[in-house]
Amino acid sequence: MSHTTSPFGVLLVNLGTPDSPTAPDVKKFLKQFLSDPRVVDISPWIWKPILNGIILNTRPAKVAKLYESIWWEQGSPLMVISQRQRDKLAQSLHASMGVEVPVELGMSYGNPSLESGLSKLKAQGAEKIFVLPLYAQYSCSTVAPVFDAIGDLNKTKRDFPELRINKDYFDHPDYISALADSVKQHWQSKGRGEVLLMSFHGVPVRYVTEGDPYQKQCQTTAELVAQSLGLTTDQWRICFQSQFGKEEWLTPATDMLLEALPAEGVKSVDIMCPAFSSDCLETLEEISQEGKASFIAAGGERYEFIGCLNDSEAHISLLTEITKQQTLGWC
Ligand SMILES: C=CC1=C(C)c2cc3[nH]c(cc4nc(cc5[nH]c(cc1n2)c(C)c5CCC(=O)O)C(CCC(=O)O)=C4C)c(C)c3C=C
Ligand SMILES: [Fe+2]
Ligand SMILES: [Fe+2]
Image 1: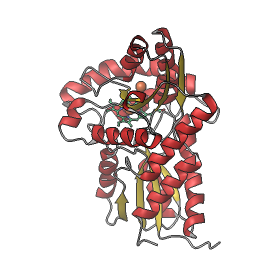
Image 2: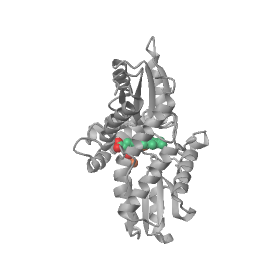
Image 3: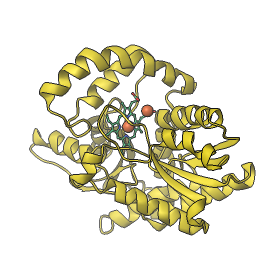
Image 4: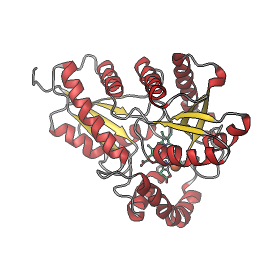
């Protein structure tokens, strides 16, 4: 195998996670994240006093306990899985392109920062950068901040690398088949529920009415997965999780749906989270633990969580394919 280095590098981007499951580290992370006007876009005159006066004084201790319940020996699941994705994508690109392609991680909030990921790529000789945000569905609250941050970093530089930033991959055939195959594998090992729930991270309805294509992309992903599995309309549902704050968010809300399903006669479900490329607090705690408890308390009998694509072969092969398609002509 050749050991030539490619002229481009890949920056794998995710949202980020606290450095430790302690209140001070969770506070530091939440402060940076929730101060981004792309995430919470209400006027700073109104938002800053709420954030600094209430949220950052109450939420970190509560959320730190939740992080503690899902934390792994090697660190935050989101971080550990992201590192595995980085290493496996580098191996896979080397094997399929015949050149060594540097791959680094950059988190929108917390560590390692986007800036450190870009510097590491530059140090390895990458003159062109392919930025791959690990969100299949574009949202103004997740992918757009990556565009903003990279633009901002370049503002202070006299020169900047040639850049391509992936916008989304919500309908990529390899993404749909990876999700569908993960459901089939799960059915084989754990049996099959009456209904497959596809729970996507929510966003405020206003973001969508103002032009965010997120909801539409989630709907398309869910329909394509259902179609690929041959499900009839009564065998699957879409829902939106992790509501934050008082504004109206996308519905149906996952927690409300889980409480309502047993009364509708649905006692056995499988639930997956296609908007998350790695398991994290929002899937391992909110969906796998809390969701199960509320479904069972409402009269449900069987609740099985299907893990995210994480560092599975199908996921790495999807990321390899996207990288090859988007860097055509660079190698
Ligand atoms: C404030 C509003 C929020 C919006 C809008 C939002 C969108 C959004 N988030 C993800 C994926 C992740 N979110 C994670 C954590 C997280 N998200 C919010 C709030 C919003 N998210 C908060 C306050 C937190 C921190 C935890 C908490 O305090 O509840 C994470 C990281 C989880 C981890 O393990 O560290 C991810 C990943 C998506 C995909 C999305 C919009 C499409
Ligand atoms: Fe979130
Ligand atoms: Fe949450």
